[in-house]
Image (cartoon, rainbow, N blue to C red):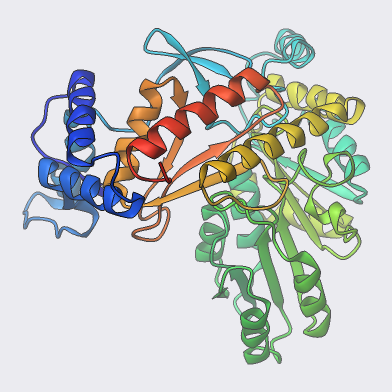
Length: 455
């Protein structure tokens, strides 16, 4: 990650630099020249360095020495452009309070605006009163409540699956499931842009993992051919990729799974509540419910809470229930979270207009960003990454957006490939037309000012 050295944290500094940049890049310069002038100016001004590539200094202090030597975040904090762990002091709709002021968030995954829905909160409060703050044990022993089983049955019915198991996080659902299913002689085929939880599961499992090029069916088939004689093959993909907002080519994956006798696991973290009939995900969108062997989901996006689940055939779920170490040795999802998710699922099923509003907001903002000159993906996914490229410029733009009242996400290497830094935005049913216009105005102003889009 590109960071900076020896500057005091100061918003005044950021504003002064903004004025200097305006002087460095004249408004009549072509956009690409303006952009290059700005990048050159920033790098010369900040004496940047590639901290993630810098070798650690020799040390005899043992295993913790790397912690003492790791100073990249400190460098960014000193400058005042460190973009992570901002403290949210309150929330209402698509607005959050940070540092004593309200800003519009475009970094949330609360796609349907259910996190603060009164019915969800009331259900969570009722469970809190009845069952207490936690389960103080794993599902395997004393941590299974009637609430867990009720939610599992509701999810199975909603998704048209035989059985479901609820876990404490979405990360755990992927990691635990893959780790227990992938045996020593088995092979997993995983999209290169899959979520980290999938790769953690593959890393823990004794089997072999092959990474195929992102959404590339030709390369996936090439990989499958190399292992065509292996009986145990599992193709794993996100349904919606969390950084790019791309939708997986599930029809292509299912065809190859049939051709090469492979099973398919789909992580619907960003598809559930967003795509498909009633928000049942990309699997439903392509009418492939019966073709997907394992459906993994999370409660931390559209359902507004925390937790994860796996839906599949009853024998598969029973195997995971008794073999997944990540599930067996983790405390159960707390009562309030379970009840809140159950209420959110009820709202999802009874109020399809929330998904319609989400799609309307997504289409509106994508059209606006495209007309400004940004490249956007042409689908209904509310994840809208804006590739800036240069990491220095991206971090600076993110801070200026915050000063304009827009709380956005930022992704730099190694989360994305080097020189592919992006402002990651996401939109919800809670955003009002006024919110969206403010967001577009901020991107228009700063994008032109920094040479990211044409003037």
